Length: 215
Image 1 (cartoon, rainbow, N blue to C red):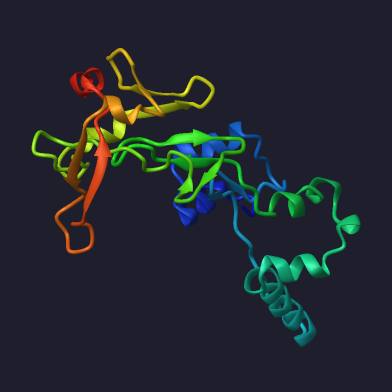
Image 2: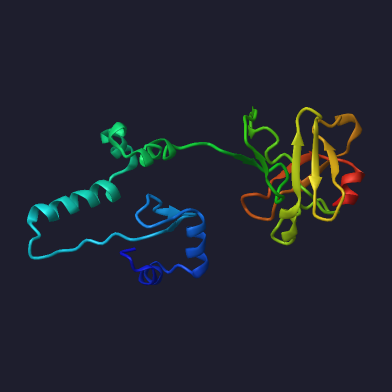
């Protein structure tokens, strides 16, 4: 920050806590850490003087177009990774899209089940995604619109044990079988919601009294 951290902090609107976090993350003057946790660590200044030539300005404009207006794919096509400084050679690989996590929502309006490896696909999408919902005594779907704490119910699917575990802070977990026997459960009709798009009736299966009492 041009040896003026105070002015840089003011210009970038960084708090004292942000500055400390950047320092603890290893940021020092003139390093290659331009962003830490999405926050800029410095700025770029262009100085003009009596000796500045048109060719210099053209290079600056070219740099802005190359670095800030061109797409990453265009830059990668022209980039010679072998000529990059050692500290920057990891950047092209880091900028490639990577799928690190898949989130499915087995129960309508409840929390996500996070997957860090592969997951099967069904005819409707990811297996067990949006396969359950909570209904009240009248058969209406219970959603976060009126019960915001539903998002704190976390489902954990175990495909090997064929169970879905429901957890909530301060309560013992409850388990639901992934494949219920149709002849042992009651079929009910419930409305997904009271909109003109989602007011179709759907058929489902009661998962039993144990999970009902838990909810």
